[in-house]
Amino acid sequence: MAMVIVDSVVHLWWYDRQGGIQTHGLDFIEDLPHFLVLLIALQRLPSKGWGKIHTTKSQIHLEGQYGGMDIELGERLVTYWGIQGRATNILEVKAVSLPPLIPLGLKERLETQGMVAKLLWAQSKRVWESKILQEIPKRIKDLSEEDRDAVEGHIPDMITSTSFPDCETSNIRNDLGIPVEDIENRVLIISVFRKLRPITELEGDEFWRAFWDCVLCHGVLWKIGIRHRDISTANLMYYRYKGQVMGVLNDYDLSTLVGSDNDDGPSGKDWTGTLPYMALELLEPAALAGHVEHTYHHDFEAFIWVLTWVAHRYQGGKEIPNPPFNLWKADNEKCLLKKRVFRDKLITKQLEHRPTGSYASVWQSCGKVFMRTAFFILAEEEKLDTVDEYLGRMKKSIEGSGKDLS
Image 1: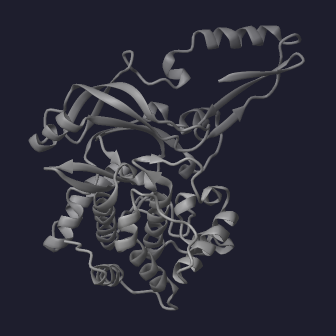
Image 2: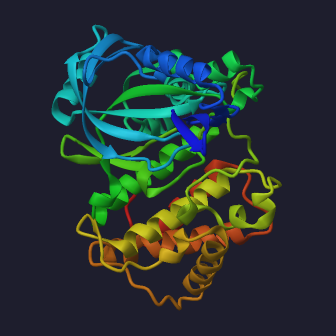
């Protein structure tokens, strides 16, 4: 909340993750009594009126699927710089008390790997990430053992997720009689997860294993009606289990749940994704205008760009100085142009860029095969009909190059 003063006229501004609200001007010289009333009202406004949630210093009580827990927020790991939108922030978390019904296996993993909290302002009238993650076990229970294994252990472990209706952005607008679309309303959600590591820390065969885990998990989830729609380096994570790397497909905030009655989130034709990794077709003007449906092959192509990005920009778990492909982050037109050039040179074996030492071997053994095969598949006039056809063609090509995918 702030005041904007022009000469002797003051405007009260309220700004939240939905947008801004400006009052009519009040002349504090000509209408001093009303101005004093305003100052007294602001002075006596309780913390709830300022949009503050009830906390004890940095300690917050949350209720979730396993019962209540108290947490203390720690170091900020990911910061969103901006005023409007989801404003996702990730923080370290210390558990003051764990939920009473938490499974023993999950409790043991938390003790060794720690926890993080995700704070975001989600659209209030859509299916939230917490429901999607709770729905996954129900939908995979009747799948084949191979498909269940592709998902179990490869999605994030959510301990709890709590929304704060007192902080919903529609509250003040309803009080003021401002009409807004329900889909614009946002509500604060705090979710606690087992801590994961970014896939960019991995090198060589370990990176490839985690990457392929995410490809397979994503494919199975798509088959059962869970559309991720935001494949990026930030959303491919990993952890270690009995000394083995396990890839995790993370972050379902932009995902859709096919078959849900109340998902008013991104439709199949909404422009979602992270620019450097988005499929070429989704960068075309038709897609920007909402005329292209987001299908499996768009996410499938996004994995290609993630592989390219990591292999050429990271060395020893860190981004190299002056990395290539910076124009992929500029805007959709430059990104589309530069990625088309890269694709054409890859297919014709005229690439100028070379992977870093951390990824040279995996790029040579399966990275280029993965990408060339994927582009040939995507270039076909008729896209493949099923997820299994895409993955089956890819497995055959990679194994044909001598790479073991078991």
